[in-house]
Structure formats: C-alpha cells, structure tokens
Image (cartoon, rainbow, N blue to C red; front, side):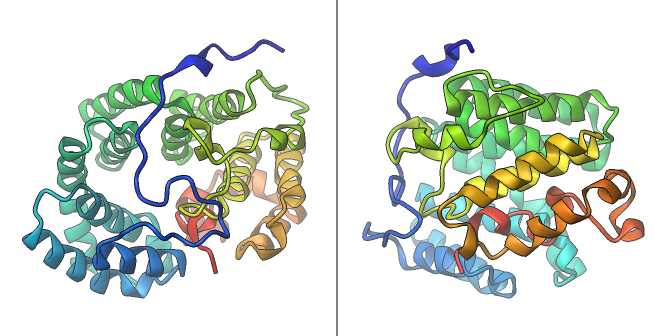
Length: 309
C-alpha cells in the first residue's frame, strides 16, 4: 500500500476543547452561550434550538466579532435543517434557518479565515443549497470551495463533502465522487490506500491520536462518536450503491471501537446489519415511501457523531 501524499499538509489552528478525548472534561474558557450550545448539542436536545439561538444571538449583539459565537449560530441553523426528519421544526423556523445558515457561515469564514474546517462548513451549505434549489452555479461554487478545503485539511473536508453528496442518486457523478471521498478520508487517516473491497478498518485504529490534523479522524470531545457515525454513513453509502457485503463489513468494524456499547445509535447500526440486503433497495427510494433513510437524510444526521448521551 502506498503512503498517502497528503501527509505533509501544514498544521491547522486549534479552537476550544479541540484536543480532548470523548470522555474528557472541557476546561477551556467558553462564553456561556457557547457552553449552552455544546451542552444541548451533545445531549441531542433538538427542542432547545430556539433557546440556543436566542442566547447566541444575544451574545453576538454584545460581541459581534466573536468567531466562536458566529460559528455556533451557523451550526445551530444547520442542525435544525439537517434533522428535519424529526418533524419538530415549524415552517417559519425552517425558512429562517434556510435564510440564515449561509450568511452566518460566510461571516464565520471571514472571522476564521485560517481554519479550513470553517471553509468546509461554508462549502457544505453552498453545495447543499445547489442540490436543494437545483442551482448548478451554486453547486459548482460549493464544489470549488470544497476543493480548496480538502487541499488544506483533507482529513476533515473529504468527509464533509462526501456526506452531502450521499443524498444524490447512486448513478450520479456526484454520488460516485462522494463515495470515493469517504474512502479517501480513510486513506489520509490510515496513512495508506485501503482496499475498497476488503478494507481492514480495525487495523487503522492503532493510529488514533488527539494531536494535530489527524485528531479529527477519531472520537473526541467535540464528536464523541465520530468514528461510529463515519462507519454508519459509509456503510449506508455502500449499501445504497449495491455493495452490500462491503457495507456490512464497514458497519461491523464499528463494533470493535472501545466506546461502541455507549453509542446512542448502536441499535441503528445493528438494524442496518440485519436489513442490509433490503436497504439496498430502500436507500434508493424516497425515505417517506421506504421507511428507511440513509444517515444524511435521517433524524440523527448530526447526532450519530455528536450526541454524547
């Protein structure tokens, strides 16, 4: 297996709580509104979104150039939109988040211009708008932003791009690119090009780290079940693509993670393994008709990685 040429990318900036493990306590100084965001986000408390936004917006009125507050305003709107399958957001709330998410991430990028993750967030909302509105220019803009973000921080932005593309039809160029981006994400985290048919994912766990760019490959305080959620998504994409056996192999790799038994969405993955053959058809139908949705279109689109309890 060849060493990945992207291993020499520069180091990237740190934000609060960035190098903590999933069971660590964040002792970094956080604005109370940021702390409230993380507490409710990690709890999966979707009903708290209006209160989260009220607190963040009030804090921003006093500190209009605070990059952390601006990021979290944008992220909270995206959380609302990403998990619309919960059926809990009102029409007015959805409209507000659609109108606000992109400008909020654009401003966050102005305030965080040295952080490729924020560029990836802006790329993501731009690409998603292109898909949602059938806007080829916006889609192209998002793709170009992602190309820049991937070059700067591939371990983070390969996933971000591929995840959004997972919603496209399996025979589309966008879906095919998204699936390859998930594999490339594993490659840059593993340090080698992994076998696409018989991937030994458990062998990559020995590279786990809390430091540097590759910290985002693993579970952390920010995303306590990052790896489990990644395997759920990749397995879903493979099953959707008709690669059922490989998809099941990816799902099953999650069982070998140290925190798997505590993962709130463990039952979802176990059901995926049991129903993989049927899901190869269901994942290519509308979720409302099939009763099953890939992770991106589910009620746990964010929470599969980020919910801590």
